[in-house]
Amino acid sequence: MATAAASVAPASTSTSSVLLLRRLPSPAPGAFFARRLGAPAPRRARLLLQVALTSEVSSDDVAAEEAAAAPKIGKRVRVTAPLRVHHIVKAPDLDIQGMEGVVKQYVGVWKGKRITANLPFKIEFQLDVEGQPKPVRFFVHLREDEFEFVDQE
Image (cartoon, rainbow, N blue to C red; front, side, top):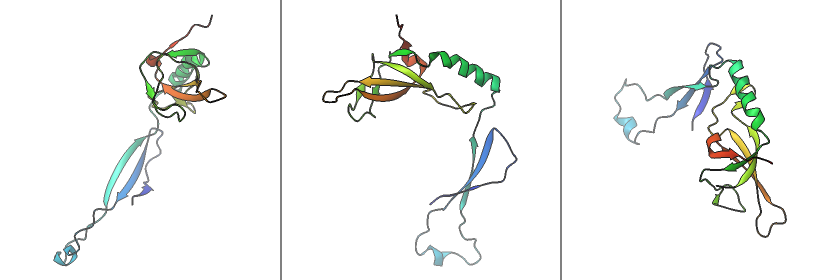
């Protein structure tokens, strides 16, 4: 079982240090008696991980990214890439290529900080399923190159 303890590090906005302790595998049952007297007992292995919390980006860049994504929210889009989604219970293994939906959210920026969302656009789709009185609503996260905007005339 792994335990985690925070190590003391200088205050930083870009990284945080986390110290993880991992127990080494137990030796063979007779290994205790075979050990020489005075030999050090096995200790826990320590692993220091650096976890990046934020990237070194100015708030102006983040604001510009949010401003560029804001006009896209609420727009109607059509999926152009051949994609299958498996998280819809009523329609497993659904191919969404050609389906139309609405951009609901841009998740590349969270609480004023850029995050590493590799699928930053949250798009809502509605699917008519046989035997269901209302269409099934579901969300899919996509990259910008996987959909195109549909002109609403």
